[in-house]
Length: 401
Image (tube, rainbow, N blue to C red; front, side, top):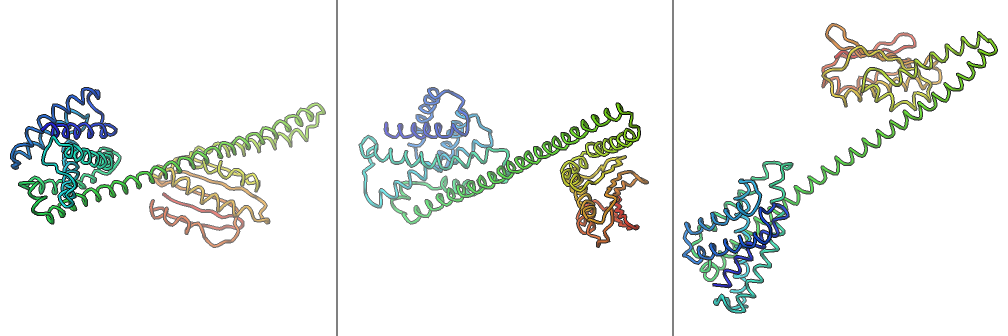
């Protein structure tokens, strides 16, 4: 009787200590131990009675109340925790009983004998290992970031628990019907194995998603740093040229060279306008693309002119960036040809009769129309109308949204 009582205390205490890493205990460890002693005493009194279905359900209710008073836990998880607790006890005890009866290792008929203590220690170790392994299941079920459909995993364990409740005499099952006992142990083990591998797969997928998100954030940060660095380099080079031009302007003023003053002032004004168009276009998406392509624009000595009179409402920002990137890449490819004299790109965005018109004018290289193919998915997604027109040495692309 004392050995039986100690075993139940160890069940409750071991389960509490392992599960406290997932579910916070409501009390200090000392008070939790007292609670375990109280519930162990009640459990012993109930379990030494004849194991009718009513007694088994009462045992289940007592264990559920222990979970409620011991852990800070959602009510929906109390049943799951209680079923898991009884499953682990049944698996540990029945596995030992099955092996012990088959090999006749220990005589556990006397609960006060050394053999019973050794058997209890083996069962508790097995109980601890199973509790530790399958605590991962509960960590997923309680995590709100995982799918709510994970609760369907508990259908099979609940069904198996129902079969266990209907067994009239566990000891008779082990002694007289070993084949049935082996099948039942296999059913319980298959439940555990299924739950373990499924939770392992779910965690692996979740970690992979988190890793992908971290990589995306890292790539975004690196791109942002690169963009800021490009902007700094470009601004520095412009200001450096501007200072030199200011010195030249002061020299021309001192020498009263009016022709050079007029020419330099005109040049400085054109450069300032060009730089302003590069920095600010009244469109966040276009600003981003212009900064990304800044090095190539400077390399080709391309002049960018933008007229943004409205916004692309209804189009996602990522799609806006992709749209401007495709258009600008095409225009820059046109400008890189050696026979192009006027390397100017003009982008206009305005509203015409409740439609948003996106127009881009760039040098024409008599290519086949590649843009429509590149924008095929976006044109379909936003039901845009597309038109391309070539006049002399100019190419005009028009999109209506």
